[in-house]
Length: 569
Ligand code: GLC
Image (cartoon, rainbow, N blue to C red; front, side, top):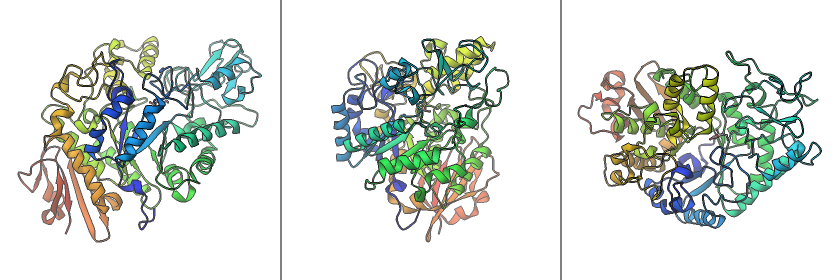
């Protein structure tokens, strides 16, 4: 990135809405576009620049809208195209932009493209999806007859048999989410045309769902390769065949040419890329290559995983620093980082990276926010994070709704795992933690709905809600407002070079940012013990406070979960 012409999004902050859980305007217990329109003042008040809206398209809702049956309409559950147009106009009038979710690795199995593709082996759209015969020498439906041994992200095999035609179709996620075949140029052109249609309507860009999975490693004869066996299962890890596949850069560059190149700036693209490495991300986000503006990488949200996300490991702060530090260094001279703690697929940040016990919840939520927002990159705020929302006290299996969680439970228990042990992991890691309704006020359904919420409201909304925090200058919400303003006001926050300090310290996360002759020192205490700031970072003695998350009792000491942003002289 040339420092003399920074892209607009270097000083922008994005806010993610998961519409189902944001605000319900019609009393059916499910959030909708009317609800988003009704709560726009909340976004203006925070000061965010961009709204990323998770999917609102027509969908059977097998994966809450990440299974799309029509790319060019709005599901009546969420409202109408007229309301979407209203939202675009309302955001633009407030100086904000709208990012739509682009889910094109797969469609719903109820999308007319798949219905047509499935209708016969000779359908003109047969090749729009990945259809394959059973493994050679085996009959359709035999155990292990799937064309490859790949394990789905949502448990079980990635192949489902279509009994009518005797062939299997590929789905890296749920069986209701068949993968599109990007090798077929007609598929690509159909997707690009759809994207142009949305941009013509006024949307300002896309968050691209699992976009580094669209290119599969397929042999010239159409053969797909087995992956290494996953211990304890009959399945294998196929990621070598579909993460950052052989044609991924070609496809993204083509998409850029076909969809974005002729349009003026002001748009934004962010690719969700599980398993992406720093080296790959440099290529994806190098402006000279014209692929995407930034990517979501997954390293830091995997640090507490063992063999899978359900295999819990304690998180080591030192690992977190090492990981963020490498991403900051790796994308310093080329490319750009996106910064996030959580989203609709992750547990709540304050419960996972912070300390959600009553004594430390507010301080750890604001400390984590300060740490993230002071990095170089574009920060993403996930709905509710700005008021310190925490994980839900789920009890039994019946409390969960998410397809990933429920599939995992069924597979794990039928494979002999102890049911209570599986539940312990679900409570900590289930995506439902991030999906409970936004807590607007202390009323029975937290001001989210007049009906029965589709997922229970967290009982802690009596204390933790937006209304209560709005006028409290010490609240998490007020702190987010200040952080977002800081990025807008201070070029050093948006563009300054990042240098990690104290890389081996277990509890203090510190770094500097510098731009021309301006320099900031950021020091965050990620623990419950006070830390000797001036001893650890003597340069802090002469520095002046730009922003902190706590009143300072003793300048020389960082209190538990205290964060300070200091200007060096
Ligand atoms: C992405 C989405 C997630 C979804 C999956 C399949 O990871 O963020 O919610 O389940 O892709 O579309």
